[in-house]
Image 1 (tube, one colour):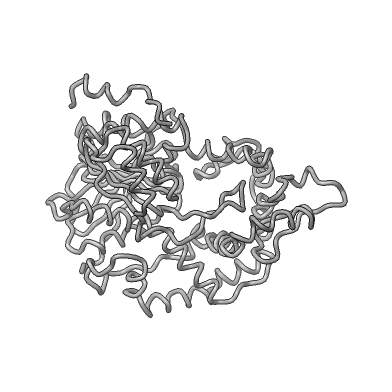
Image 2 (cartoon, helix red, strand yellow):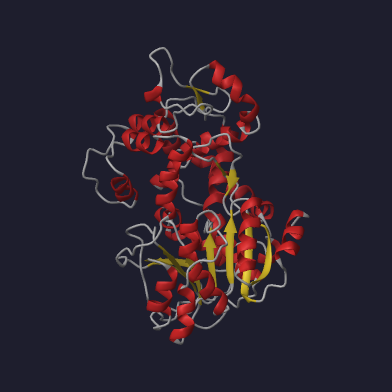
Length: 460
C-alpha cells in the first residue's frame, strides 16, 4: 500500500485549471454491483443542463416518458421498475413519445406548451430532425441550420436504427481477422478486411422482420436500403470504437498482452453508455486485434455504471484468448485504495477514460483531480478520448498544468462515425465519440502552455 502521505496528495482541492487466430470467448461474471457512492454524475449534470438552452426541456422529457422525476428516469435507465405509470401501449406510441421529446423550436426554443393555439411545431423536411414554430423562425434559423442539415439527416435515421441494438436484434458481426493486425490501422482498412461477408450480414439485417417492424412503427417513410446500411455501419463503429480504441492504446504504449495470467485494462469514469448496452461479444474485436493474447480483463469503474452489469474482483489468471468484462460502481481513486492496493483487483496495464469531461465543469474537475494525480504519480499508462478539437486543446492544457508527461495525442483512427447531436442545441455542429485521443505516462511533460497551444493550433 502506498504511504499515507503520498495517497493524501490525490485528495487535495482542485487548482485554478477549470489522446487469432482463435475466436476469443468473452466472459461476463454475474455478481451484484457495490453500493453507489456519492460523487458528481456526468449523466445527471448532462440531463439538467438541457434546461440551460431550452428552459423546461428536462420536464418535457419526463412528461413524455410518463415519469415523475429524474430519479425515476435514472431508475428505469438502469433497468429498475418505476413506481409510476411508465410504459407504452404499443411500439407506435413509444416512438411517437420519444420523438415528442425533440419537439421545440430550434430558433426561439419555445416548447409545445408555450405555443399559441394557431401554431404547431413542424420539422425540417430535409433532415426531419429539428422543429420550428413557424416559417419566420425557420427562415431566420436557416443560415445556422444549413451547415448541419445533411448530417442531421443521418442523426434522425441513426436514432431510430439504434433501437435494434437495444432490443438485441442487431448483433455485431465478429470473427478472427483474416488480415495481419498491423495492417488494420483505421476504419477503412477494417471495413476492407471484413469485405463481402460484412455486406452480406448487413443486407440480411435490412430484410429482417425486426427492421420491417421498426419502420412500420415509427410513422415515417422507410429510407432507401443504402441509407439504412450506412446507418448500420455507423452504429457498428459506435459500438466497436471503444474496444478498438483500447487496442490503439495497448499498441501505442507497447503493452505486452502475452503476459502470463493476462492483462488488465481499467475504464475509469465509465458511464451508463459504456455498460448498459454492452453485450458479451462487443469486446471480441479487441481480442482479434491481439492474436495469441493470454487473456484480457476489462474493468469499468464509474458512478454511472448500469445496474445489472457484472462485478468481479478476482485476480485469478485468465484463460488464454478470453476477455472478461466487469464493473465497479464508485470513484476510481476510492476503487484504487479499496481494491487495487489491497490486492483484490489486478494492477492495471492501461487505464482509459472515454470523454471524462473534466475540462467542462469545476465539479467534474474536482472529482477527477484525485484520479488524474494518482495515474500520474503511479506512472500508469493512460489513454483519454474527447469529442472535439476544442476539447482536445482544453484537456491538454489541464494535463500540462498537472505536469503529466503527454506521450501522444491526435485524431483517433477508430473514432465513432455516428454523428452526435447536441440535444438542446440541435444546430450546433455534431461531434463524434472518441474523435481525438491523449496518452500520458507519469510526470514531467516537456511542453509548456505556450508551446502546446502553438503545436495544437498548427495541426495535429
